[in-house]
Structures are given as C-alpha cells and as structure tokens.
Length: 254
Image 1 (cartoon, rainbow, N blue to C red):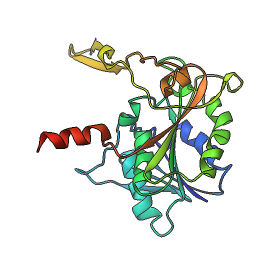
Image 2: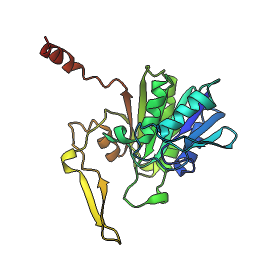
Image 3: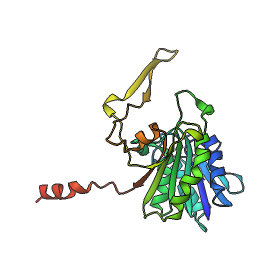
Image 4: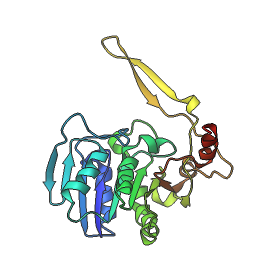
C-alpha cells in the first residue's frame, strides 16, 4: 500500500514524525508532501494569486510553499501522478479538530481533498490539556492508539467521497478509555471568546478563542467523546446538501 502523509503544522512538525511512525505499521512505501510552514486554520483554501514552489527534501519527501490542499494536489497531480497513493493520512495535528473545527482545519481539509480525488483519506489530531504548550504537546495517546484505531477503518473500504476524522484525548495512553464512533459536534458560537490586546505601538490586536461545547444526551458527539477520555472517530462526507430543505425550497419557486 502506497501512503501519502501531509499535515497543516508544516513539514518539520513533531506530529508528522509521529504519523510517519504510525504509517510504517501499514506500509513500507510512505510519501510525504506537506506545507513548508505552518498552515493551521487554512481550511480548504488554494493558493491562486502567487506561485507554489516545490522542494525535494529527500527520497519520497517534499514540501510546498502553500496550503495543505496545495500539498495534496501537488502530490496527486504532479509528484505521484503515475502511481497515486492508496491512502492519505493527514496529521497528527497539534491540537484537536472537533465539531466545526473541520471547516477551518487544514488537517481535515487535506483529507477532504484526498476524498474528492477518490482516495481513502483520514485526518488525525492530538488534543492537549492547556493553552500555551507549544512544542511540548505530548503525542503519546496518538502514538499508542493510532494503529489500533486505523486498522478497522483500513480493513473496511470507505464509501466514495467520504473521510474519517480521528481525535485523541489529552491523556496518557493507559488512561484512554477506548474508542467511540460519534457524530460531529457543535460548540456554542454565541459564546465565542475574543481576546483583545495592545501592541507596543499602541494598536489593538485580537486572538480568537473557542466557545464551550453544547452537551447532548448520551454525550454522542466528538467534542464530548474526547472530553470523556475516548478516542473519537467521526465519518464525514463532502456532500453538504441539506436534504430536508430540497422539497421545501423547490415548492417556493412553483
């Protein structure tokens, strides 16, 4: 099996090194095509107004001066065009990608691009316990649990145009309670946190924070599964059509 690895934290990120070890349990042909620099929050964006530059760093290892989506496109349509990947793994992201994060996340968007191309794609993210951890974020849960979480997914063919979003809790491996397959959650957007500060020149600047999650009966979302100490596994699909509204809107134009 030919596996392509990418991420949004950049080609030198610790999580990508962790992912390379994880992928080695499933294949000895691993390709890496990742952004040169961190692209967190880039979502599914493309670089269209400036050139994307490609650099070869070693055998089957490349970086691009663009977004995670650029990296996947470059891999599929250029670097690996004669022998495309059988699987795309994106991550392991430094920080969770839960709930509506999937719409902002470069990690998840790289997997979305793979799914659009018809390639089974999985995003992996590691939660961490507190803000400000930087490069000290531990990936022990992902390292210990990823292989056993991935194996059943890879054994059962994924439906076309779908991807899987996996999040590991911020716990030591032995404290992880197990794996839960759950739906995508939603935070309380009305309680979005914006931190305002002032720079040395007297101008205001802002940081965006995330609001608290909405709890559901049975704790049935990815947000709650990870908070409860489980690895969350969430299947996603790329058709954003809201089926119940089709008939209602069609009736409005008769």
